[in-house]
Length: 235
Image (cartoon, rainbow, N blue to C red):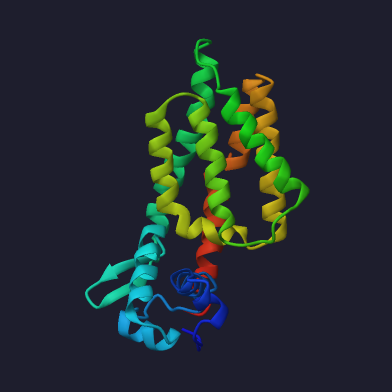
């Protein structure tokens, strides 16, 4: 892990010490400055960040929830998922994503919740007007879109399953949003899908969503492989 300094006085004064440590450690991991072979322990990180163990402990707990680290016999370590498990999860994700719209095509009584979709449309229109800088945290916004789209189709169990899968692949997908073109393309594709569903052009919406999440699993896995390569650049 790269050399670290203590938090700024402003961060400590504002009571955001825990957030500061979490963000710094997360950035170290996402930018490949923490080797998958490196042990992450509270005493070691406390010295590195020049803080007590409490904010470090809470940061590690959040990173564990994010799926970025895992417990080991000697503390924590950066998660390095296998391509085989990723393939299975991505395949399941695609199936769950498409099912939300497919069930509305198959059953005319299934109608999408226009209020949910309308709110999501407004959110992504704002993002198109002011495009955020590339950042791994963009994955949270992306997951929110897919959760809302599934939720609008009315099957809560389907949505819960999708949320679970997305949490499991989040650690890799985070690295998919470090380039301007990926962020811009994602925003435009989300808006296209929302417009089509709201216009009840469901067959076209299904095609657009399939294209968005991956018509070809091989293409999706290639993208995941590139993301994993970023994770291990300095590992």
